[in-house]
Length: 373
Image (cartoon, rainbow, N blue to C red):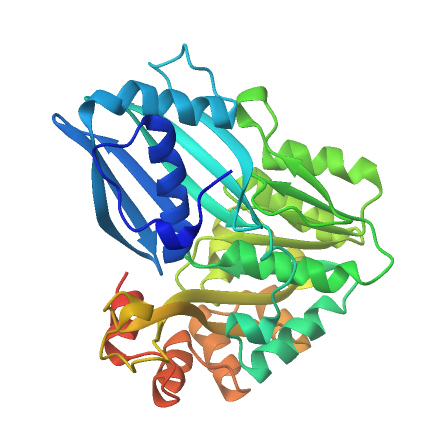
């Protein structure tokens, strides 16, 4: 469908709306962008792309193309072309240079018209990552694999939006998929398709929430359940009770560190003795840009003169042992739990980042930038 990437080097005002869509997608793939922002303004449409976590302007389209450009995106994604005053979502799959990509798009009415934000998801990534390839250290990998050997319990991945939590969970599912198990996911939305896994798209507008979906999934005879996110007290309690009844439950949570997950779940109404009985592993992670191998941060064509190319995980991984379970059940303070964990080899995310700086994988400046957010 799309032109050869080698011929796509710019966005110019002479393009038609169809050509603009084609060229923008090709340029995004060529630049390794994860997101494309198309923002209508008074005189033009600003096109920005996010690569390695940072967003930058790449060009503009003339204002006259706004309606036709947005309509073309709506047709491709299955959104309604006659609806302009309310947000819409859509998705489609396309191919660039023989590689399949899933495009997820969100339309939002703004002062100058509807904007569109596209998320680019390579189908080649789904289910093909390894824990070491993501950036986890050998100690981290050992802890994760030990937790995944369990047939029941709760495995949680924490971190801010865009920190790679979904990719880590999908890598966990890929590991479990090798076993004769029934695996079900509840996601909002489904980003990557995983062969052999039943994936459910949560639709809160239709009354399907993570909590209600989890209750329904239990009637599907699952062994492993992935819940996209624990967002509220109800989901937290249902997830813990599900883990208590013989299911391995994987999910995400928004906390700043691994150990802060414990008081967060207690604040969400989970009983301390139930949390102690079910919690198996907590992973807290961030993504940092990696130093360009071609130029070593000098700046070259490979890294668009930034000095960085690609990203890797920095993480802290806490495997919950019997002693820690007892401490949770006995309502020990977070500082007591942290002291015990550190005395048994637990390393903070900052320590992991500093090690990657020493190894020449990333820089002090990048580590400071990421951990400051």
